[in-house]
Image (tube, rainbow, N blue to C red; front, side, top):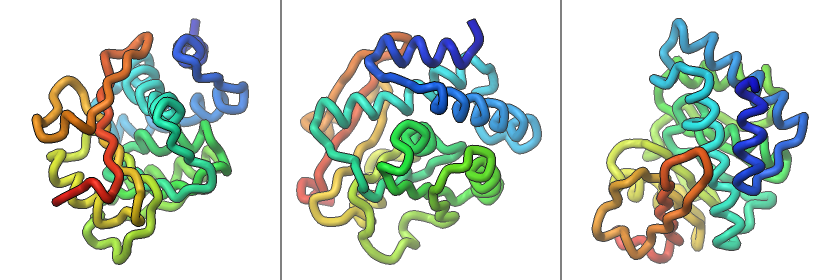
Length: 208
């Protein structure tokens, strides 16, 4: 079984249906990432099967979180804060297509260039903001997602400032979650992945 078929199967086992069009785009994504990674070190994960599970599948777990928590993403402005190689934002854009309006926030120039090139390769419409979150002028996003980006409380502060009123901030975490944030933490289990924790906060609940 090749890596893309493995992604299809693992996604299906977790209740996420990927079409052939989705899979074609994930294959382009995988090949483009591998090519750029050899020169530009976009991600420290370099093995195909690990990119499939630790990046692609893990990003798609947000689909199930949105369903479970009744978070409507249709026609919403979604920002991926500190996107790096495009995770989790681009897998979400591949999955939802024109249903979401995606913005990728990334300060590292070489990663911004990669995201620009990838947009052409994937023929997807997303915006790249090659700047720090604190340089974005006004609250403009309905949902801000972040995965493995700096200290959690920094992400909370940056995310809060760019969220619209009643917008959602979702921080993807591994095992360790700060004590103060446990009331906002949702743990979910997925086949093929370690337990995933999501900190889900509505803007009105952030006191920072």
